[in-house]
Length: 143
Image (cartoon, rainbow, N blue to C red; front, side, top):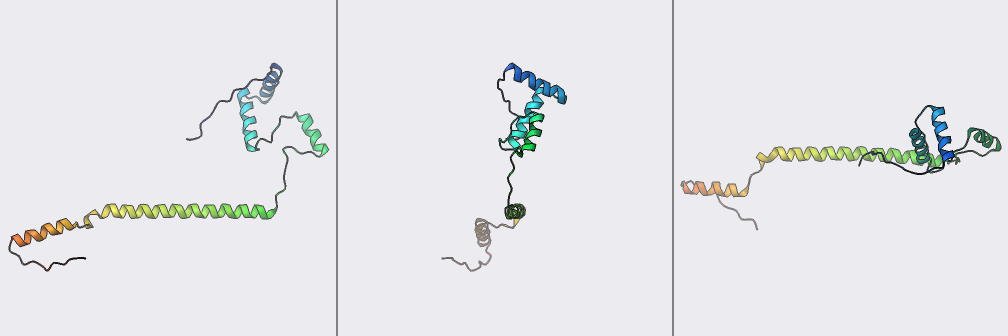
């Protein structure tokens, strides 16, 4: 259930393959590292990624288009998000404290087995005394 690597397989035409190999050689990394970087970027930006040559990237910034697209978020949203993160952290801490307390109580319960007196044992002791002629204590009935 941990972080296992998975294999992705797909086909590209020969020209694209050569271009990708050139990119890998230029960056002095393996071809599979190029794909891993691309996939990591794709996941980090929720699929809002496209491969663009650097020359086109510079021309896009001149025309005013920015990639990846950016959205302005109101400060109130950011503050609410931060507040919720702090509250979640606080709740996690409380949960951990509660778990520690429950474990402490369980340990006390496990350690306290000697303090438990079984009613059957008391009945057996009472019967032993009457056999020896000792005076019985008054009996009580719960009801």
